[in-house]
Length: 105
Image (cartoon, rainbow, N blue to C red):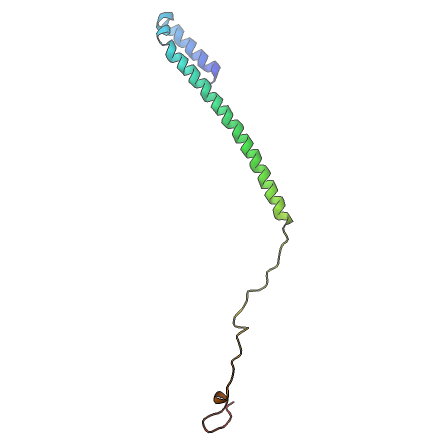
C-alpha cells in the first residue's frame, strides 16, 4: 500500500471514529504507518538489488560467450580400437611342427 493510500485510509478511519476514539488507536495506526514505510523501503532496496544482479548476470553471460568464441575447435581422432592393434602372436617351434616333425600350415 502506498503512503498516500495508507494516509487516506487512516484519515477515513479517524473521520468515522471521531477524534476521541481515533486517539485511542493512534499508537496502532502509527505502527501501521511505520511498518508500511519499512516494507516499501525494503521492497525498493530489493528491486534495486535485482536490477544490479540482472545487469551483472548479463555481463557474465556476454563474457562467457566471448571466451567460448576464442577457444579453438579441435577435431578429435577416431576412438582407439584394440582390435586393430592386437599384439602379433609369437610362434614357437613346438607350435610350428607336429609331433612327427612335419611343418603345420
